[in-house]
Structure formats: C-alpha cells, structure tokens
Image (cartoon, rainbow, N blue to C red; front, side):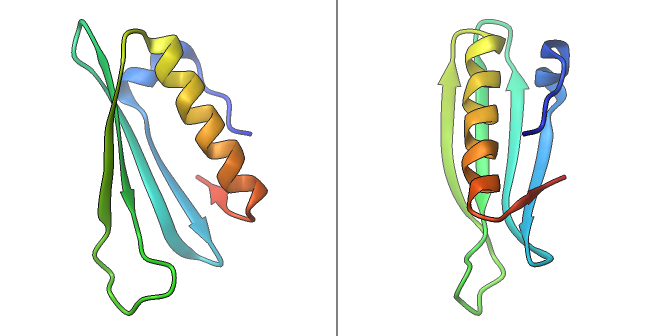
Length: 84
C-alpha cells in the first residue's frame, strides 16, 4: 500500500494503472474547513478513453481523507492495479 505523509494529502494526485492502462486518478484538495477527494474513473472494457467522475467525497479532516484514499488504493492493488 502507498504511504504518504499526512501533510502531503493536500497536494495528493495518485494515478492507478492496470496492465499499463489508466484505471483511476485520485486527487485530494484542502479547502481549509474540508478535504475533498475526487476520482476520475477510466472505462476498463469500453473503447472510450474519457473518464467518468466519481465523488466528490468530502471529509472533515486530513486523516479521514487519507484513510479513504489508502483504503481505495489497497482495494485497487488487491484487484491487480498498480498505484503510482
């Protein structure tokens, strides 16, 4: 699983690939009073290359956003994806 310092959550952008193709791009933004995680999800078995958006997922703290991102990355890695 990818570990990153809590301070880095506010600047996080993580790309996830499987077999060299993009699967998900996660980003996290600090808005002062809330942390927002967004995901661009790329279709796995369609000809389209345009991602669909998932979220935004809003959290009250950096720790909550970090837990969400780490859990998401762990699930994707368990499915055979590589997080960059």
